[in-house]
Length: 121
Length: 186
Image (cartoon, rainbow over all chains, first blue to last red; front, side):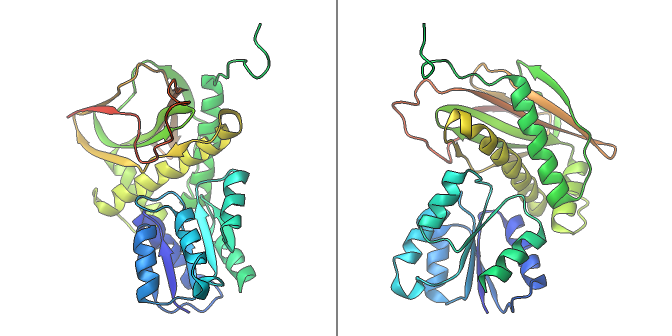
């Protein structure tokens, strides 16, 4: 399964890529995007089976990206795990209402990501 | 006499320090596998920036506005980046600066989450990282900084926050990405 990681931090993209390689879900190619605009372009260019996305990003944040993805019928069931420093209940609920499949708050452990992914597949 | 709704909301340096301690310990124990001491707290009129090393700044905006920052020496920045990315760094590079930016983002983001239940929703800017020698940073507003100085296995790091009510909060929308203006003297 190919994966798209969306985060404006290259450090977080590297960490998530490492965690994905250790997870029990089979991971193929991993693509990266630095914001929602790049992520939408990446999704159009290359279909993936899983997206991990931050919320606070320049140009287009993760919540707007989420809404735009869910507005497309062929991406309605695409698993999207939000990984963000935003931790209020209101923000988590907003992400879920917009169609997030899961939510992990930063800072995170590798096991938290792995467990969340295991529950999504 | 003010009604309960009209009572002025205040945030004490002790509350800020507790939020900084909690967030910093969470980030260090979860993602860096480093043990911190409990940190020494001081309140400064002038931001306690180092004369050299790395400073990372994240702006907060909303009903309250301010800045959170992390400052440390270049060798310690390399150590933090190494712990985060599981790679050894001996000098400052893009990876190290990006890692310090993300550590600051996570600490200040968690401080924000802790305070939002009382202060209302705030936006977080993208981090700005400065590395060099003989520089000082200054907030353009005359605010007090709550400074927490941590000792980490022989190294030292400061996390500091200044936060004040936004007098323009009712008339201006949150502008994530636009931190409180800083003056930089290099």
